[in-house]
Each structure stands twice: as structure tokens, then as C-alpha cells.
Amino acid sequence: MPTVEDVRAFWDRRPCNIRHSPREVGTREYFDEVERRKYFVEPHIPGFAQFDRWKGKKVLEIGCGIGTDAVNFARAGADYSAIELSSVSLEMAKRRFDVFGVGGQFVHGNSEDLSRFFPDASFDLVYSFGVVHHTPRPAEVIREIRKVVKPDGELRLMLYAKNSWKNLMIDAGLDQPEAQTGCPIAFTYTPEEVRGLLEGFDVIAIEQAHIFPYVIEKYVRYEYQLQPWFEAMPREMFEALERHLGWHLLITAKPTLGG
Image (tube, rainbow, N blue to C red; front, side, top):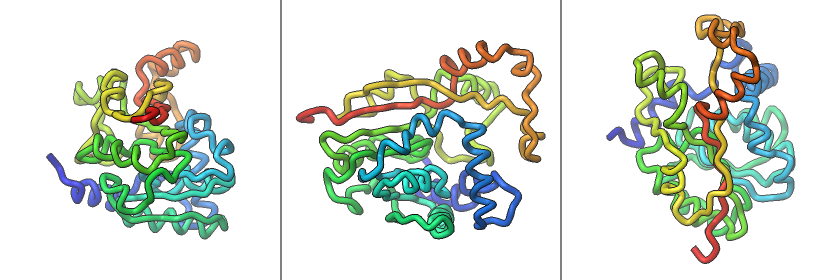
């Protein structure tokens, strides 16, 4: 089994979404373009995160990456904190907050040891999008989240879906979990496995979303040409396919009362 250090080294080499803009890295124009591209390709994220809902609330993000969702929580008025394993990603997120003049607390650390850094029962929302499935011990992260979330708080979590178009392509040797090769860990889950993982939580909803439809060779040049099989597909059919075979499981859960 790869170690946390293997995972850290992988994301330090190329933080997630770092190449979402050709502009000068770290500028306002760069960050704006990164955000536009991310939410263009993954338009379900803002609706899932519900940024405006957390104004005045304490939000903890597990794995902030270079800070796209992070800055939107902060802009919306959340009391924002993050823990991030990759020091390279964390510095980018901090730079982003400086550029946009918003505040937050950032911790460089392993989310498997979350309660070392944050007090028990202190967050209204714990949010994590596409992170927990990359750590060697996801169940330990969930146990740690259960400690730091308030009894009436909420967990919003994206995990990769086992029953998905992308996973079928990976199994066929036609795709890989991440943009760069060699991702040390990328667990996938069925809804039943999600419920087993989320010990101490009541799962309120699990929805499925996101099939990446673009020609990769064009996409890396910032051109958005659909794969021919998706281009020929009616939009309603593609959306139905995403709901049943999307790569993202969008999970909402609440702490089990008395758990």
C-alpha cells in the first residue's frame, strides 16, 4: 500500500488544476481562469457546495488544493479553515486568498490526524471534494471528521464512483484516475460502501454526476471539442448517463444523534 508520503509527493509534483490556465501562475487573471474552467467542466460543484448557505458558519475543507472552492466559501462569508497535505497546493491557496483579499485558516497536515489540529465539535460544515479517496486510510479520516463536526453539523463529501463510465474505462486500460499518471491511491465506492465508510453519520443523500466528455488532446489546449460519441448523443441522454454512471458520488450526511 502506498504511504501518505507517496500521496504528498504526487500532489506536490502537480497540484490538482494547476494547469487550468496558461496565464501567469498566481495572478488574479490566472485564478479567475482556473475557476471558470473548473466550474465549466464540473458545473455541479457550486450547487453541491452551496457556498452562500454557509455565511457566518464555521467551514472546514479537507484538502483545499489550490483553493478554488476555498475562496468561494470565504467570499460568501464563511469562517473558513482548511487542512491540506500538499505544501505546494497550500501555498497556492494562501496566495489566492491574498490576491482576492479574503481570510482563512490554513493547516499543513494529514487529514487522518485531523483532531490534532482542530477542536472537537467545532465546524458547522466539513466539506471535501475528491480528496478522501486518495488517502491510505479513508475510514480514519471519517472518524476524525466525526470528532470535529458539530452534533448538528453536516458533511458534504465527493468520492469516486465504482459503478461509473470512467471506472469502466480505467478497468479497460483506456483511462486513468487523474490527469497525471501514477496516482498512488484512488479508491472507488458503491453507495453501499459509502454507507459502510461513513460510520457515525446518517447518509441523507447520494447523487451521481460528471462524465468528462471532451477530446483530451484538444482540452489541454483549452479547446472544448466533445468526443464524437458524446457529440452525437442528445443532451437529455448524456445527463441521464451522468446520473447513473457519473464519476462523482455527491454525498450529504449528518452526524448520527447519540453516535
